[in-house]
Image (tube, rainbow, N blue to C red; front, side, top):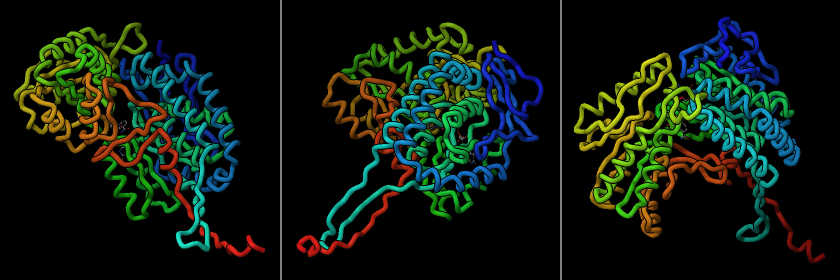
Length: 500
Ligand code: NAD
């Protein structure tokens, strides 16, 4: 049962399902209330579950002020001590698993099983960075014409702004903050207004682990554009790491240009899910279900266009529709629910408009297509077969529980259709021929390719996109270097000194 709060709770905390959660901003090591607040809604019920302090541009600048003051001290915390803090925070997060998982389900609507999966992945990411912190190396080389040595080290970029979306409330903050803090950068986190509670629990765990004041700062706000514009214009900010839509990402890149602020961008996707004629059709259909309907389709790596060879199109489509119709839609706390709600009433209306648009082109609606009656923002999992792929609606990120199936007559055509998009985040290919899988993967214009699998996020993997899906990588060995800059020291060496 959700515990509802009715009065404004800008003063400090809220209790949900027995878990106490801070509702203030976290600046310079202190939770701070604000006179203005905004409501957090449970999308499964439409009920207000909390009221958060609504930060202003001045709060953003105060957060940056605190991050800038803490930067030098944090950078000089010895790697082993920094790693110890990470390990302590990791243990605290594990102890608070139930609170975090249930809060994620409350504010984002995702089913508890999905929230648990996200929790595990997020804490694994955090652990990955904990293990990396004490293993950052430099290089040593002779100058090319002798006479000196080339010593290269890595230094933290500096105070960083981390802007996260609502669709993976824990994973996004854990992945960014882990890399930034591990590298020795201090951070200002700007949460998404739909899911600030999970961010608050994450930051509280870091505070309780002993991260020094000012190293981590958290701002919730309904004035994202004002807060980030103010912070981005301040020369003390040296890095922005953003996950969200391509439109907002490009605005931030423009804001980064005058001060040449280092930028990493994880943006939208238009994932092609390619099923070739020699694929294991049952496996492809099952993986397509997870890849498409996880998080009610609100994932950047979702299968946005399912591209199937004509030889297996009928068999695949029939099975995929059957599996879609078996999905249970409902409140993520109910047993057996597979698909939760859309994040807001506005977005749910947007999904209905997409169905209208897709219905107006040469297509067939195979199942679904309507919102579910009730207070929550549910939408029936929907499948279209699309015959006219030239329409603009076919090349946009759906970000919805709507699957679109396209039929092609060759591998070459599948690749051409897959690449016919401005995005390039995740792509998927299903075939039993390893050689073909590799040849096709290399031709797909994307940052990541799942071969015979529809889920691929992993701490050991460099996650990110090409084209308008972004710049830079999160995870893998690469991620921490997004927050580090190489620095080269030229050291004169008098060779004769070795002969004295
Ligand atoms: P969004 O771009 O609207 O919002 C993302 C974040 O940016 C939120 O915190 C929001 O408050 C903030 N924001 C909005 N306008 C801003 C502005 N003018 N200046 C600064 N910040 C601003 O995206 P969303 O609707 O929350 O998330 C969905 C999008 O995110 C989809 O396009 C999805 O593909 C993408 N996404 C990408 C990845 C990835 O890793 N590539 C992961 C998750 C989501």
